Image 1 (tube, rainbow, N blue to C red):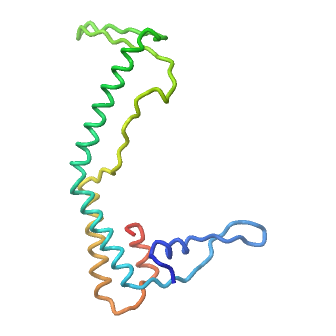
Image 2: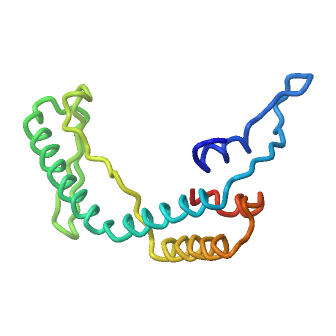
Image 3: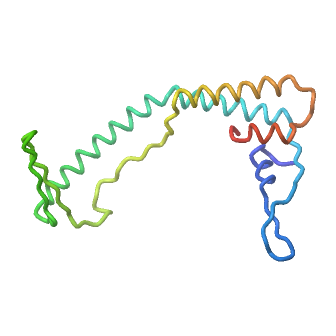
Length: 161
């Protein structure tokens, strides 16, 4: 038996080849214990709730890092303006602003590293839908007398595992 529902689901999508070498899916019967699926869904629900509740804090941290990076890029551009090529200007009379664009030929490793988001933004409607589906699946699985989860149920809940 495999260790996790994820490993068992991967077997469902395993491919085989026919006599001509063409890839085709192979039917595999996998019996996943209900207890393992319940445990995995509960863990997924906990992670979803944690991610949703901390996303504002994560976004604020990311924005601070991004603002610091923008300042670093500005300082870098100003320090290297003598290397500017392809200078373009555009004066906007209606707002009395001068837009100046230019290119600086640099090596990417010399530039400050742009921060990356290490989280996914979850919109309220997506959070609500996912949470309801996971909770519904948990209620159904906790009521069943079956030892293993049916293939159709696994297909419906596999995206949350």
